[in-house]
Image (tube, rainbow, N blue to C red):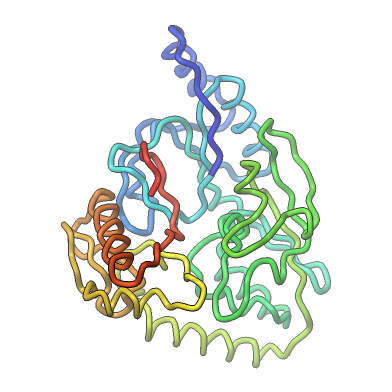
Length: 314
């Protein structure tokens, strides 16, 4: 997430109108984030734009800095919970910025490309190494931001170079080692970087074996996870030596419901939206899980999801 502090000036309204009206990239007002988030929750974004190129993203970021408008970059919004009160400033959605190019054993991928589409492209080119991410519901930018992983693989294993905007809106290149990957962490979180593109390094493989592996992983995911319902994916990070789902089960919370949010009956590590849940329902249920698990096991579950627009982060 990238936030730039906003100044409380008397000319704020006038500046904001100019910010939108004179923008070279279309900016919309008061757009419900529930139309974009995987949980189907979240209030209105003050402003929202959907750029399609490097230049448009860079322009929006620099314009936000110039006008002292907070800005936030989102891809698929699959691992976020947005406040019911919405988000101040400009939300930049990257899903239309999604080109995938082949370059030998490498794929050059825009940040807004969906992981599923990247996996399909890799399979098409008989390149192996990306199968682990084929079912992760997100875009490359978000996956790199949090070093997403599944089934024994992580973004750090395959990402070799990253192009990103720094906090001043300047385009910079980073090597894998410079990006400080660790469990669900990257340099982007520390320095508020906007990931634009990455080079993914893969290996030659059998197309049929790659496709078969992807099907196996997707079948496993469908059998174990509540993909049929809106959710924000895995809610908590895995504590060393423990599995989150069984801990929540043993704490007696599987199926627990607050408002329209429910601890999934299929996998207790997920919270699903079963009846017009609000972000507040999600937050309250997350807090209940944390408190109950801590009381029973003495372990604090740290959220894997990102909380946006809340005064206090969970």
